[in-house]
Image 1 (cartoon, helix red, strand yellow):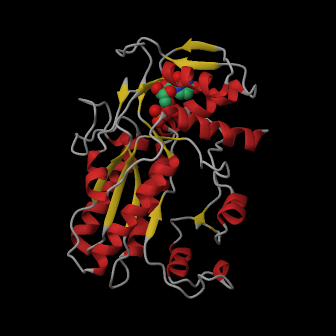
Image 2 (image 1 turned 180 degrees about the vertical axis):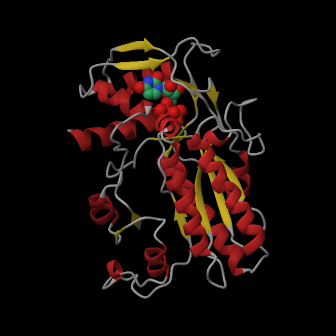
Image 3 (image 1 turned 90 degrees about the vertical axis):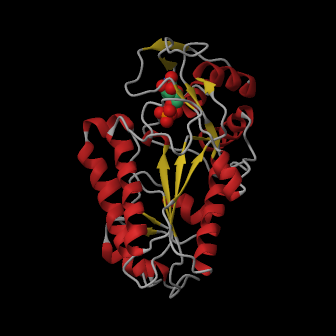
Length: 319
Ligand code: UDP
């Protein structure tokens, strides 16, 4: 795994996942070349030494929407610029290496209708979403020009934790709703701010489609297998295969809080605060394409289960 450790956790990669970690930038062509050939010094003595990479899963990006508005250069340099270098490395060999790319529902901008299908117009309203959309465009162009095969996954709200409690969210700063709710419930934070209760939704709070991280992971395996099959059969490379990853069910901020109370048996202090800039009232996926084409079946669609796993992880991590 290549990670610059700006937000990553070395001990998780090495001790929990047990895979070699290469510390470096996705935009460092030299590191990439060495890694793709299995020749990076960090791979010496591992089963990966001398084994060329067959496909790439590209997750690395900055993902704070607010920061992307105040410091767009940082987002375009990292999310777009470094990814361009990666794609150039992938198409440098005679047979371009397939790639699975983490995109986002933020590329849709303000939804014209929900559920959102993959062909909904894409009009991001912040540089974070724009940087992801630009990479989608690169993948399309690189597919057509250089035969680069790709899958684009547009994540909705990634949530939950590995069911056995070894892996979960650990962000600094933490901005996501579910971990913040759990921080308050465990006493790590004094209160929760609800960003707006005057949205045109049944209880006035924003509705999101929360998808369990293990289900996201499963989709990546299916996407990768599909790309490798296409490559094996030497089918001509077409446009990227694009899939929304969500459950197709929306929950409001209030519903998340109520569910968390049931799961944890704890209460929480919440204040209604101003709307957070750039938050659409509702984001709910139509995820039928991933079901039909990849055979993806989310195992943990229930919000209670998602929060239960996040809570187990939270207690494991923070005591
Ligand atoms: N939210 C909130 N209080 C918080 C964090 C988030 O009310 O402390 C709301 C946020 O406005 C959004 C929803 O919870 O409507 C999900 O936010 P999150 O940051 O988890 O994900 P996003 O939708 O931004 O990807």
